[in-house]
Image (cartoon, rainbow, N blue to C red):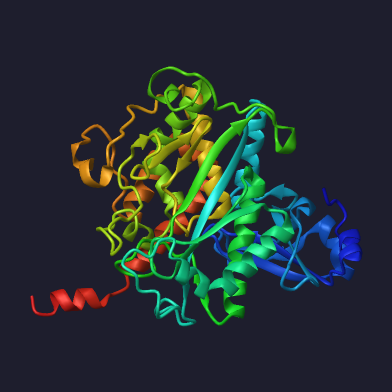
Length: 442
């Protein structure tokens, strides 16, 4: 573990550090600090005006200090004289409670106190577009079913190869890359890790992907639904819980010969209760896992050109079946398919842990397992909640879920709801071409 950033710089030829934090809306904020100043910055932090970012602060607030976590440092493979390091936000000696990385750290500590260590892997889908974002970057990527299209993936080989090479260099253990279900869409997978490390990697991956795409003359986007009629960008999370963090983990706490429908797919009692928490809080979670107006163009979309949205709209779980919100593809883990590309890397991990801990604390039952094709037969399921239809419904569901709000932290929840309601009001104050097309002649 890196503890001295000045020594890291000396050993690796680093001239600058990007001291980075992520705000409530997922915006990545940083200051570029020369190595000569990193000793003071590591101790005291880099100063920011919180109001200038998407945090619930005013210009009257004192400096917010971003104190770098040296264990997270990553030397930029494409610009090795610069190193990125995730930071924890502090104000007047106290953690900023609404700061997403702090929310996650607190929930990890709460889990650890119970002997539970959450490990996750994420599937971060993205599109490569033209620089103006108007269309996909490859004019020949037109197949009706483009998923796994080897010609299309090789036409963007330079971008995919460079990203994968960098992940190999960083020791992330990337294991597969593919063209996804939409024209112009890609997915890259790397090994699962402790929740905070996964969140840091996820945050850095988004930064790295955008940077490499720009270098090649493209624009990478994780927007949930950037192209009408095509599959959107999901951010599926694979979740398991262990007896210890990192390489010291020996026992998968989720695994076991439990009873009933969860036991049949390899989830023991703790896994059952954790999944029960996810199911119980899913509609409130959506405000965080699907945090934008555009998010609801994905999870409530009509069938796409390829024939499926690959996104849920109902709170159901299953075995190895991709048409449900949660699938259990094998013993000891499950895949949450709810989140999209706009999800804040830290809040995504935090809300999974919050809901899971709630489930364990309440011994929540996840309800019946449905093994049907939800896209074809979903209408037959009468006992499951529907996911929110829009961002406002999601915010109301989160606000109504007092237990989930408390688990995420009262200060965070209040700030998040306030800022997101402002965003919704901004959206409602805008006017679209659709409104004119359908209303001018009323």
